[in-house]
Image (tube, rainbow, N blue to C red; front, side, top):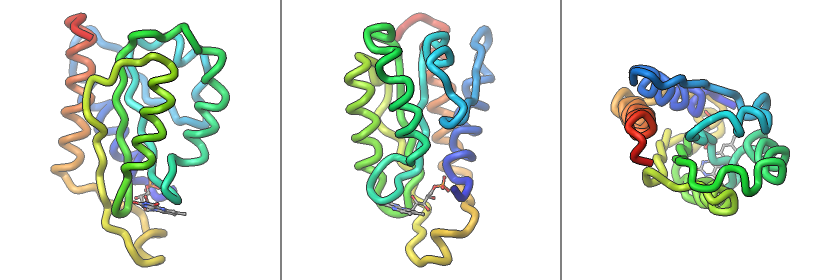
Length: 153
Ligand SMILES: Cc1cc2nc3c(=O)[nH]c(=O)nc-3n(C[C@H](O)[C@H](O)[C@H](O)COP(=O)(O)O)c2cc1C
């Protein structure tokens, strides 16, 4: 809603894109289809935590894609990133639970960035993600891409 998750996702895609021989696609949850899931070797799911949950758009993505892809993704690599005001753990847990159902393999611990937005004004303001946090996202993307390229996942 306020750009933080998008900046994190762009940083991760940028980090992954530097890896030779790996094709990186940045797809909005609202536009992602089962075919997008089927044709990828690995996934970094990025969501804000809103009301102690993943975003409605991310939930909609999983609702639309879960059963069409069930039993077709076993063993593929994934990681989760959460943009949160002060917590983020429950959104991460929800994504982990769905990924477990898909039999995906976590290749990193959840990456949670807290924007420390507490007041209504701060929550509704456009989010700036600190350079060191964007670097963590880029490093996760690079690690995912390198692992896939080397076939270690
Ligand atoms: C309706 C709403 C509910 C929120 N609930 C939580 C919450 O439960 N836990 C939390 O850590 N942050 C919460 N936040 C803060 C957001 O996670 C934070 O603003 C984050 O930067 C949003 O990501 P975005 O910039 O990609 O929209 C909430 C924000 C909104 C608008």
